[in-house]
Length: 130
Image (cartoon, rainbow, N blue to C red; front, side, top):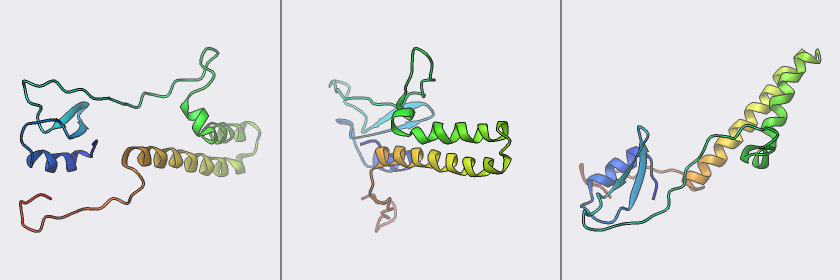
């Protein structure tokens, strides 16, 4: 499971060497826990988010345009309003744009962490991890 770094540090402290069960990214490095056994090979799949490919004649689409076209629509509209001398519309288009960006963030978080609410489980005994 990929977990946030603070969860990873708790999980890592409770495990001995063996097959990796948890992973996180910290300071640009991927960390796994428990530490893999030195005499065993493990395989897995690494999935990462790449930067957004800029639109061009050779790249007419990207994942943002496919999944969140409103980001481009409202971004362009907010920049067009002053040009069209509709300055009063700038704030409206900017609000729509910021909402579209927030929807991208929410979709990313749901893909990474699922849709269940986050919860903190405190140990019943100090220093004990569950």
